[in-house]
Length: 366
Image 1: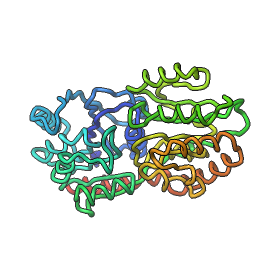
Image 2: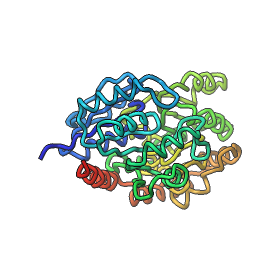
Image 3: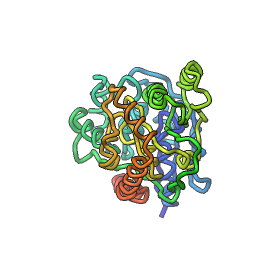
Image 4: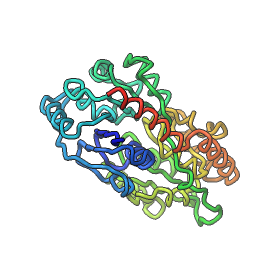
């Protein structure tokens, strides 16, 4: 039986949750699938996450920036689809919506559209009207997959998509990869965060809160990732005189090597949905301090919810960090509870199987 040919249109293939999930899925689905990937901004850094024995082909495609839809981009996607001849077209976030339209007008492959979150200036409560209407009409014949309850509700209640075509599939973690580290090895308590250095992650909030939460300068903060905010964050760290305590080591292909050195995990975002890095931290047995965004409060264990603080309440976020830095028993209790919940609800094997079932059902529609 010939492999199912899948085309994946990403706004970017830089390191991020979508790209990490794709690498896990492509590896887990096996030889019954071949994958063709386009990164619309030309960034393929996360290609390194894909196992070398997985059949993935990257294609060049230079997209023109547009406020809604570019005829040139749509025509280009049409030519690309004639070359790939996909059995299934997978599109990711708003940045790939022109590919959805091009497919509707031409190739007509079954389309699965993944929505994982929003950039700065947009969120579930801050939807741009033109984008709402575009999604409402362009995605009518697509299956929309969301990892969070809030995105699922947004797709049905705001975008007005058919509930039968909106599916929530939680992200998942490979537990063999993320093992609990031995305790008591660190000379300093280390707070960690992993993610792209983008404005919506608001790592400046985390830096400010960390400095207030550790006035005795006994802890360290490590923010792992790369992105456009690096220079601004590095300048803020230098200005605070905290270069010895706060580090920005860059992007990584092996986040597990960082998690196992962390004592607590922090999410400081203005907008999130169901962050994969949060689940990885939970799988490693870490307690979490976070802003209350997306499904974060529902993802963590019940015991950890008191440390998920209202967005905009900076004092509460500082207090949550302070408590985790100063209390080893709390860290241990919350971390163990988070690992138990992650293992029960966010196993990568379950995620891969749900995607496999969806892809096979969609391929039969062709």
